[in-house]
Amino acid sequence: MATSCGRSPRTRWKSRHGATWPWAWSPPRPSGTRCSKLAPKAQPQTTPPRQPLPREALAGRRASALQSVPPARTQRSRSRPPPPASQTAPTKRQPRQRPHQVRQGDRTLWAGQEALRSCGARAVELRYRAISRRKLLGENHIEYRNFGHTDLSCSAVGFGTWEMGTTQYGEIDIRQAVRAVEMAVDHGITLFDTAEVYGPFTSEELLARGLGARRKDVVLVTKVGFAYRDDPDASGPAAVAGRDASPAHITEHTEGCLERLGTDYLDLLLIHWPDHKTPHEDTIAALEAMKEAGKIRHYGVSNYDVPMMAECERHGHLTANQVGYHMFDRRMEAAVLPYCQAQGIGYMAYGSLGFGLLTGAFTPDTTFVDWDWRSSGRAFGLPLFEREHFLKELKVVERLREFAADSGHSVAQLAIAWLLGNRAVTVGLVGMRNETELEENVAAADWRLSDADRATIDGFFAAEGVPTYVDAKQAA
Image 1 (cartoon, rainbow, N blue to C red):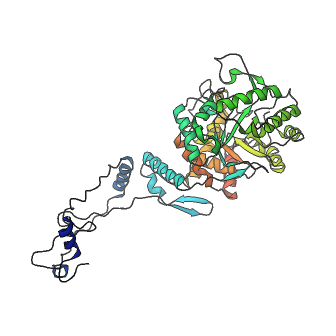
Image 2 (cartoon, rainbow, N blue to C red):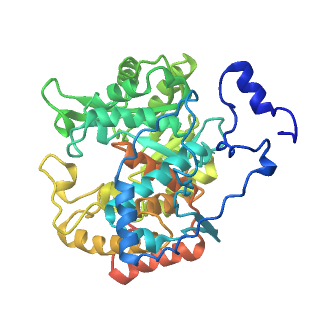
């Protein structure tokens, strides 16, 4: 503190150290004064009020700001004092404009959403990604659920790797897919599902590369039960010779899975499809033997109906059944889901996004290449991709998109929230090819739909005449 007589602490510091006061700076006093009390007061400067800019100019300025990259900051050296206030007008740092989230009931609304839309599609995308990244890195919103009555727990959103097989789902960027696996662990996803038939074998190898040393931090699931042709050039369905769940076959192929995945045990091993030639008793006995040997922690099945699961339960306990389930395919609601819930069997839902239908990426002009499995028009026994059905389904997707946009979400997030709203579902498997898809899918985990929301969604299907196949026969 400066005193009315003698030297101030600032002056004593300068005479002792030969430097300016390091913590504060004020302009030099007028000559002839000894303390700040005698210094003449500066007259406030009056500036004319700023005229508000029109709305169009504000929208253009915000869009330009979102697309530009701010220059790197440079730190001012302390050896040189800043210019006097009389030469440089003080600037006040303005807070960054953010569309804050407001919780209303079971929905999360964006304040200023209309202003955000007026900035243009590119600005909305950049702002959405920034909000998602802050939300993910700041707090983990993923729910964790147990497989039935077991001690096996995982994130409610699981990482599906069928697309990483690169032979049935169109072109993908392998480097981005591997990077998505790495980031999924960072964002709280703990279950990764693959199968030896994806490729075949390619998906397991890429997943092992993405997990690396963090394999013990996740629940690793793979599937066996197919025999393959002796043709190294064959890929996809052409490489499959038939189903085989015999004890010798699944034991041998499980060893191959362990080698490709770079691990000495599996958290969960599934029989991919029912083998109608091999008794369920023999298959369960082989799975129990591998469990006792420490090769697997748990075992289960995939695409099994209720009578098949009941037969398996007579000889052991299934930890999980993995079957398709999404808005356009609700066949499992009739029997499989209730049975799994009653028997303490975990339910893994694949096709959570309707094999791409519920991503919002398809248009009436969308076509599939010949080697994409959807080009046949059928999806596990349902005509989802046949032209007539496909066009009707896109109308439902457009209604779902508008409904989701009212609360600041995408149609893919709505599909995931709808799926996880069924408490009989343990985990919803979602394919994620890159960082953008990963962030979007994980951000949907904390969205809770009300009963009224689910009724509204059902109304969209009824209005467009699109069936949900609740009473249709399960593909086995």
